[in-house]
Image (tube, rainbow, N blue to C red; front, side, top):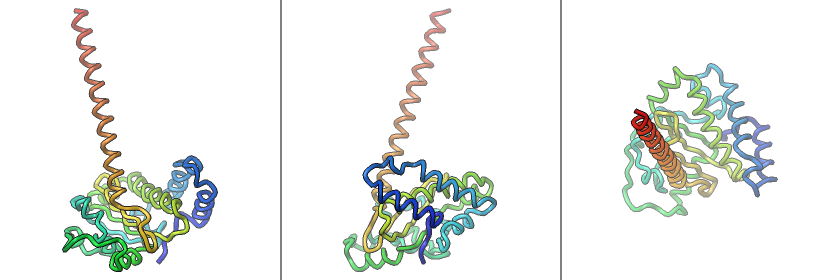
Length: 231
């Protein structure tokens, strides 16, 4: 089963703009993606998150499972069973998966068969805590949906002539914590690359927070010193 982007018009427009403007990122920056994603969210008013997902991606697989304990190194292996998430309900034994031997080559028949079984499909996994939060917070549900939309639209635009499949899992706060994108006959985006990029963003954010905290402390000490001198 194939999934569609937000609408056929959006798909056509996005594909053609990227084909004409591949040279510069600015040609199709986040503004366009944000507009498309926001429009999709507007059409899902009053729906549960699962209904929202399937109204935009008919046939999408939706599971409520806690994937937070999955090791990033295991998720990035070629033999990780991403295809297990393309069922409802997914077998929860996938959360405790462990390799039984050395990692197979990406060109192996087994890996190719798994990838091809995922092409044209979307699977989203959220933890029970996030599902409960979204029931009481429609804005959070929309934010998670927008993150899914932007992730898929960005990857669709990067290679519009390649059919793809997507697995996305989220943490309790609605942030994507694992992802895998496959393309027909080959990987289009490595899940391990996605994980590394997320770790870099988190490290940068932690460093910014550390610097901000240091500056705040310095300002506090300076103010205390000034107050003492004025006594």
